[in-house]
Length: 442
Image 1 (cartoon, rainbow, N blue to C red):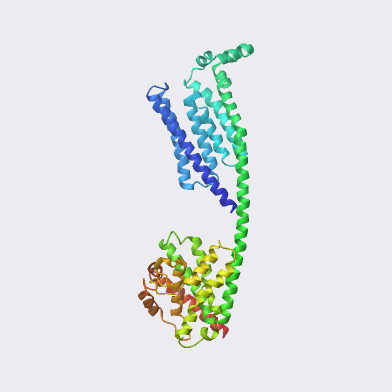
Image 2: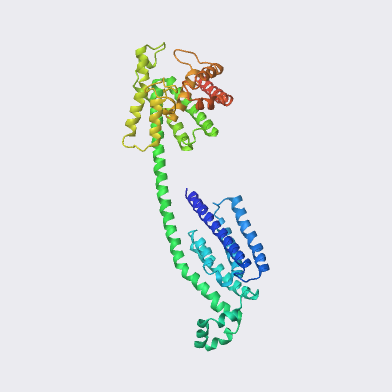
């Protein structure tokens, strides 16, 4: 979890810094256009050379992130190196017009929560400024003597310190003294602020980590409670009725199969998220929990049920909702138990509105219950009951197909029918495992 949070932070920072690098490119193109218009009088050929040098740097950085992804932690070094090279190459051309641009690498470095990275970036930037300043002069991009003789501040400085007059007569040293050093001082002035930003970001990151770790611990505890509820209730049901017990295991597997196929189909994207699918699978064993309140005489009756007995059986959906509501108690925001209630209460609703207990129609029936309905009937047809022998796979498929858009949601049923061969493999493997268990018990 910690790694994923830092991964996400690096992704945000890398995207921001890559935009910064592209912004530097925009500045260079703007100055190039100004030069063509005669506003900046510089060597056009040198401009082309500088552009040809910067372009591969930017392309290499963009290509790296396109292949490796923005979230790679080492991406910070790729982007900072590219940023410093691009800025200082442009600095050679723009000379003293680029003071503020020098702050970009420092701002970028501050985003990575590391004072060490910030100071290393500052050191590289300072070295680059001291190198690029005389380089700019030697390439003929500025006249150091003309600049210094028209600057009264420099003249006053030399008058107060006459011993520095020999230095003032050396253009390169003058540029370092009166141009490179002030730029470095400007960057030094930004260091405390950026360091503070780094510390604040680091503190906030630690708080987020601590909060997420606490939430993860609570989530694990809640998951353990949920699983305990499931197994306890399922065991109670199974101890009363072996048919229902087997039914719980079978339908859970079938719900897992259906949700997987629906997700692969891209169906119900707004609702069927991976989290929703997982909760539906984990809540499926509780769909018949209401049968705890149904009498044994009805539940284990070998023959057909009377209308009165059938009405009593139908109440297991209401009983299930009430039981789950009691379990929820004050935990009104529990998505898991909410889905468990929907499955227990609505898994006998029909898509055509002729089901029970409410007679809901179409997508008014919760998606988890529509999935459960297919799995529930599918197992009922394939399994032995006191009133019937198990149906074959072919007969089961035929019966299910006839209820397309009637009893069952057509999309959910399609997920089953279109993957029937794969379902057959699942069913046969489960049946083989059940037969082996029976022979072992014998």
